[in-house]
Length: 404
Image (cartoon, rainbow, N blue to C red):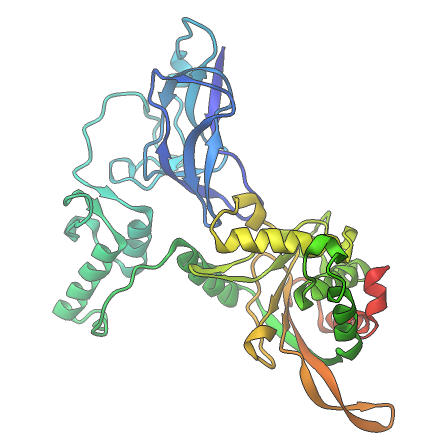
């Protein structure tokens, strides 16, 4: 029996991936569950397991190819004597991105992926190809410097664009200085935030919340070393809990804009904006409204620690209903965060500090925090967002409700 090797589908917003490499060659024996190939999406790099035990009969995509999720990129024979059928051998993988496959996109004439091909004169990385399209650079004019002169890198494309600009003045000259290589996470953050600010109509609402009782509750919890299995509850944990419960009370906020439609999400999944050495990562706590405060603390600690060490999986940073960005530890009083698409909004939390605050008729010093919502106006209006923020503040100011 012939088993297809497919690129797995990973969430609503991820449509393609770059094939980093294969762990097996054609003709090798393979075992179900062992790593077979590795891909990189705009979320993370991930090893994909072998779907069956047998012999790898075909590989229809090569290192550096950009493949659509769900595409068939290989075949496994599970029985002795299995031969790839003619119809399957002629199947076109939905692949684009390599210089020797640049014409093989959806809608082009079919080709035989197993036929012998002349090697390309050089390989173009996906990042270099995107830079060439963005800057209008002809790849034939680019001098490759990677892989002993056989691999075109993003830096090569930028340098070619700079030379062209300085020659014919069609583009402004790049400023003098070192061109820094961006990490994958930094590149993805740049692309996603630019797209979000360009395509998503943001609006903002802010409210100062009395956090005196919230901080007192946290101090009581952390005073007991055995509480939450020894995991120290943070302000972020309390805010995740408040945000999740507020979204349960305001279900209109648990939606996404997708292909011109508003999609109601089946669960409340909260992302936590996490600073790492390579850039911003947003691990997601699934079904956060169904978890206790201690369960949230345990999951938050595990996810953020693995995010900072680069040990997260694509599923752990994919999806999410809403995001929390807490810059309180960095002494930021107030800020407006960019929405993490395709989510409907993000909650920004500033530092909790003592400020003048009116309680009843008295002006006193209270620990307060400024909370700001950034919302997508396509899916939710101002009044509903204001009620949502009001509910978040109620939970912060009456934190005993977070323990219910």
